[in-house]
Length: 342
Image 1 (spheres, rainbow, N blue to C red):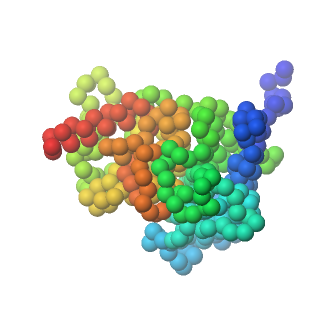
Image 2 (cartoon, rainbow, N blue to C red):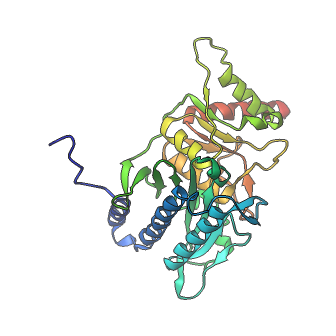
Image 3 (cartoon, helix red, strand yellow):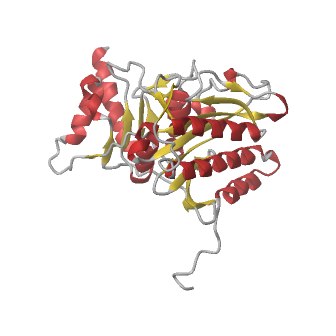
């Protein structure tokens, strides 16, 4: 075959999800497939608008703040509206939780479905003016048979999610997804308007060479975090090279790099942010689910993130995730510190 000839067996996101549905046989209803279709349509729309945000005046503040007290960008508001409308219109959702909305959205009437979706419609949007990669993060729960679809159905540990993923918007649009059977990455082909499988069965290396922390906050870090960072920046073994620092400030971009290259991403709780900074439901849980499905570890330093029982929809948490060996090294520093404290 001519090396320049295009691939004629394209595996699209829709085809890949449908193959999972066929694998499940009669147990599959097709509802999750339709829900994921709504999410990918939203991702395509946002990918287009992120690229031309400057041209169509979507850069800048919308003049409001969200529930987190953060200034909302115009693109934040647009992204949130698009995501809510698409998910509601799919007819497959019962409860929606967005970073931008103070209260959960309960779907009523004929459009009510059997899934709950938690999402950050545009993570890293404070970087949009600078052209830095941003993204959409989402997690999906199935509503138990005994429930009619209430807020309690999203206040569940992350290990009960049935799917999670993110779409990163930058030089290309990349959608990374797990339905509990490994992690796959897709790239948007703008000519076809389809997400094509480009990163099948992503496995995070067992150890990396990169750490991703906001060291501008190092003044406030607790001792185990400071000790761990010193150990990788100034290794006692002279034959070992120090780790490289890479911090973008957009969780989607930092986690995407960590999944592909290995290493550790961390946003700890500290003396200033006592509960951590990242939101549990729609940032920590989806990224932890993806990391574990790719063979990595996600922890608060003292417990598995996916085992946390949420008590509020905008609850925050400490997050460390990445390569198995790197995260285990960090956990040892927490264990040693806690043992001394005891």
